[in-house]
Every structure is written in structure tokens, then in C-alpha cells.
Image (tube, rainbow, N blue to C red):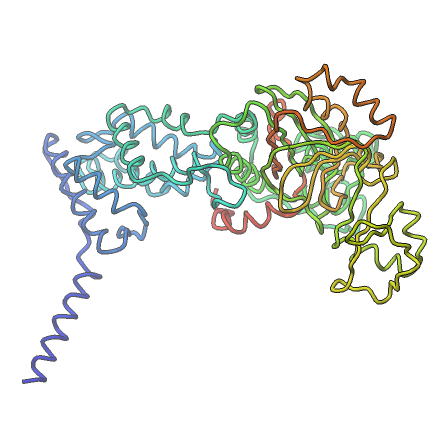
Length: 558
């Protein structure tokens, strides 16, 4: 008896499991001869498909995942399982508009493959070209669910992008709520205004809009086919020049009539123009970095543009009226005031080993003739070996040793060979003055990295193309103009001549009686400038890592 009951239990469990995992798939062809009956049968097919997916965690028969299948079930149930994107045996205008938007997703910096483009294109071709397929209610039902899933996913990517929220993201919202998704779909069902909805979701920031406009120009010229790779180093210099020239001609940098042996200055000028367009030092000589850029495909460039559009989507919908914008890869600081660039300055940023962090803060004060307290990381990595070798290094660098009570200690009284990270009860401070590494002005903002904006005693570095040269702080070429902007509304007390007089007197003074100005330090490697894309070097390889994490599956899927 016990064995019989056990057998019955096993059979019951087996039947339950097979019922869950091997439920019969809905028919792929359900023909309806009478046109007026198509909507009713499509509704039945939608109901059946949703029930089928609920037992398969959202997967259709063709292994396409509809991640929001539970919410989809809720919406269609409220709507009587009626189709949203078609009516009878034809597409609604909203269905056509959404499919066009999916097909042109690259114009938004998005990827058509994220929105079931291949499957939808196949279905649409069948329905448009084949009269028998237009009678197939199963095909219409499948298309409706795919379009609904694509609509939600595309809306999410347009508003928030692909990237995860992080510690510097300043959006209070991060994902669409279920209520927002249902309201969005309901609104589209009533109005059919797909393009209006998509535009409303996009960021309004000038940087985003400029980049998107330039993307349209880029896409008209883009060729997403594989390109011939240039080998470097080359064994045949003349053949190398010919291959490079061919590539430059195809990109419009070199006249098609130029041949190897012609005016070398014309060739060098074309190389410089290409290098400038990619943020490479403009030498006119083709070396490893230039070859790597020449070997970069248009698809690689597109993913870079898409990544940077996503970075803008991480910003809040509304920025402050006035703020400081620091773009690390561009080596540039801008002060934005009521959508106008009030100030633009070259900057020097951290090296790849000591990168400047991406952050949000507010400038609270600035100091004339500041004193630099050397971070311990710099003391032990760079200075201590030099001090042990020659104690006069401290005097040459205008450095003094102080204890925890701020008393100056004679360097000769310290056994520098015995001090370590765990036993160093001192600070190294650089005396204020023109030789100070901070220059004559420092701008403070709260952050956990102990970085700030400042002048520098090495102002010649601003003439370099590659300015990733600091220990992490941001050196500002137009530091004086920045200080005047901060106190612009208090000209009586802080006239230009007043601040200049402080500097001439070499007087240390902290100025803080001005409204705090938000500062955003960001990492943007592609920008729209005069309708063209300008790329900046991936100095910290952030693009490389993010592409591998978020876009790897799309690299060969344009």
C-alpha cells in the first residue's frame, strides 16, 4: 500500500512539473477568414500567450524574454486583452510610429537589438507582404506583446540609460515605477503620440542635445562594416604611408588625388586634422596611438557616443541655474550661468595612476596664497625616497616639517631612514608663495577625496595637449576669472582690483561670503561641437570598462 501511494505521489509530482515546464506552446498560425473577427481572436491569442509566458518566466517560444510579462498581464487584463498597436488586420499609427522609432534607435544612441527589432521586422514583413499572414491572429498577438515590451524598455533607456546608479548619481528617481509604466502605455493607447512621448523622456541638457544632433550627422556617414586593420609597427614605410593615406581619404581628411611621394606637408596636415578630431596630440606623425584610432571602427565610435548620452541621462532633469562643469577627458572647465557659458578654462587633471574622481559638490570658499599640506600618499610614494637621498630636497621644494602642534621641526633632527607609514608623526607643508604647488589661489569644495581646484606654479603645462598630469586635484588656468565670477555680485567689497591687491601683497585670505556654487566633475569622452562629434581620450579607460560591462553583447550587433 505504501509503495502504491508513493507511486501515485511520484506520478502526481511528475505531472505537475511537466505541466509547468512543458505546457503546450500556443499555435503560431491561427487564421481568421472574416476580417471583423480578427480583433476578437487576437485578444484570445494575447490571453493565451500571456498565460503561456507566466509558466516560462516571461519567455516566448522563440526564447525571446519579455521581462515585464507580469505587469503586461495586469495591463492587458485591464484592457480586456485587446491589442494596443493594431486594429483588425492593420497597424495603428502608434504601432507604425513605435516600430520606426525602434528601427531608428541608433539616432537616440540606443540599440535596436534591445527592442526585439529582428523579430518585429520579420513579423511586419510577413504581414505587409503576405495577405495570408494578415489573417494570422497569432502573429498579430505576438507583435503586440513584443511592441509593448519594447516600448517600456525604450522609454526606460531614454530617460535613465543603461548604466547603473552610482555614488555620484544625483537623480532622486532611478527606475520607472509600475504605475508610471501603466500610465505611459495607457496614454499612448489613447493618444498614439509615440514621438512626442519619446522626446519628452529625453534630457534637456545642452550637452546632450548637442551630442544627439551631431550623432545624426555621424550616422549619415557611418559605415558599420568591418574595416581593414593597419599593422603597426610597419616593415615597409612607403606601403605604410599608402595604407594610412587610403584610410584618411576614405574619412575625408586627405584629398583623393594625393599619392605617396606627393607633398608630405599635405599628408602631415591631414594626419594632424585626424589627430585633433580624436583628441590625440597633433604631431603629424603616425604612431601607435594614431594607428589604434585609425583602426577603430564606426561601431566603436557609435558605442562611445551611446555611452556618453547615457552619462547625460544620469543627471537630474533640471540643473541649477549656475554651476561649474569640469570635464576631465576634455581637460576643460566651464562655468554655466543661465544656459550660457560664462567662463571656459583649460585644466590639468590627475594622471591615470592618480585619477581625479568624478563627484558632485559645491564651492564654499577660495583662498589667496594658500599653504599646501602634502598628502601622505605623495609623501611616501614620491618624496620620502628623495628626502633620504638628499635632505636638501625639502628646501629646494620649499617644504617645511611640522608636528601635530603645528610647530616647525628642523629636518636634520629626524632620522629619515627610520620613519615609516606607521610611525610618521609629522606633516610636510609647502610655504605659501609663487613656488607653492597650489599657486596663488585655491578653491575648496567638500569631498571625501581631499581634492580641489587651484592655480599652479607650473603654468607651462597648460600648453600641452595631454594634461593628465596632477596628483588628482584640478589645476585651473583662468583661476583669477573664476574667483571674480564667484564674487561677481559683491563688486563693492571684492572688486577685481581688491583681489589683485591681495595677491600683490601675497596676503593669505579666505573668501567665503558668496552663494555656494555647485560643481560637477564628470567624465565625458564625446561631445557635439558645431554639429560634429569631437572625441576626447579615454584617459582612465572608463569607456573601455563600461563598454565591456554594458555593451559587450552589442559589439557585433549593429
